[in-house]
Length: 147
Image 1 (cartoon, rainbow, N blue to C red):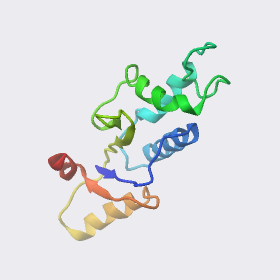
Image 2 (image 1 turned 45 degrees about the vertical axis):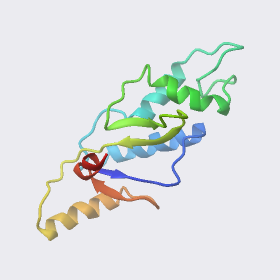
Image 3 (image 1 turned 45 degrees about the horizontal axis):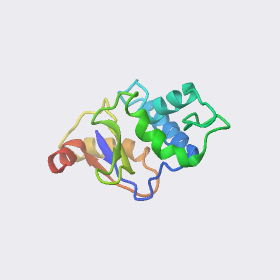
């Protein structure tokens, strides 16, 4: 299980949210990934699509004509009251400003860990297929031990 850091990460537009949801759905369909449930960004899009909007109120339905990108930050935070999150699939918000500062997702795999390089290199070759530009991968235990 690995985490990836991308210094250019942003969820400031509906397109950003949809792109992240699409990327995670693609990762979930790799044969060596062992994760069948939708990730939080996918759940957020479903929640947003079901959100009832009314004139004069904040609209969190990204497909509704009343939606404004200025609402997105509020909608992302508000959705966490309705969408289940866990330490391995959650948006991260700054404690002081409450601004979205990141997102973490864990991708459990069917891959076996091995200290033998030829087996380990196969694992990293498969994981590199998930790797867009920028960022890095780290075993989960290393992140948790320093979190």
